[in-house]
Amino acid sequence: MQEVILGNLDLFLFLLFVVIGYSCGTIAEKRHYKSIINREKELIKLMLVNAEGRFADGAVHESFLVSGSMVVSNDYFKRLLAILRNFFGGRVKAYESLIDRARREAILRMKEEAKSKGAHMIVNLRLETSTIGRSANKKNSVGSIEALAYGTAVVMNRP
Amino acid sequence: MIMTNVGSVPGKKIVEHFGIVQGSTVRAKHFGRDMMAGLKNLVGGELKGYTELLQESRQEAMDRMSEQARLMGANAVVNIRFATSSVAQGAAELFAYGTAVRVE
Image (cartoon, rainbow over all chains, first blue to last red; front, side, top):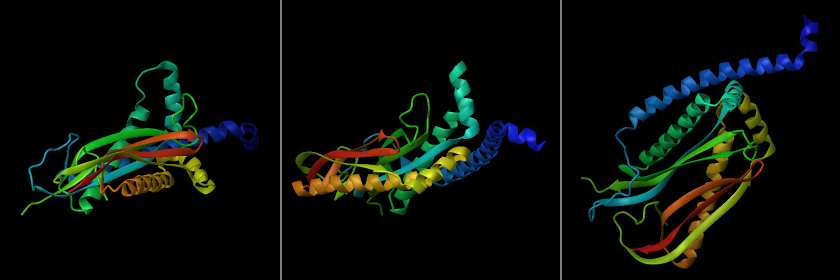
């Protein structure tokens, strides 16, 4: 048995990476989605629009820039799936959920910052994504993805 | 310094335009963080080191931008936009630009 493992060490390492990547990645993603949904419910009252708001004179007390960002990376198993997908074409679900998570988390962090500073709404939301990290400049590979959300938080003059 | 990313400062009137101001910084993470990111690439999930790094550098870019605006005599920067690009392996450029104005 030992000889078989030592003889095919790279194959076993590869399988080990796949198993570790799959189990850890799946658990982490589920946990993350749960927390995202919970926090989205909490922050739903904070209005968020991506248009420039028009405000009546004297309605606004203060306004400032808020931003949130997250850098996220895929696990080994999903990267493998994506490589296979590159071969056959079609929807790459593994990356869809990754970018979705990063973007929603970035928006949530921005909202949290706005809320902690007492804002009533956020106008002119802008979203941006970029790939960074070691494999960012290589072809056909997505390394880690950064999602950035920024907007202008507005504090109203409410009684 | 008031910063917004809408065309004006809500609730205030713009009295003077000074033109575009910008700030940028190129950052690379250090070896330890890179190692951790390599490990994280196996299991997936958030790369906290990178998130912090990018936030710090974005703040730095904004500071440079507002310093430029201050030298022009402005007290607000409107219409701020951010851009990120990776210039070399493991290094990222953070760029912020906006319009310097004076508000009442």
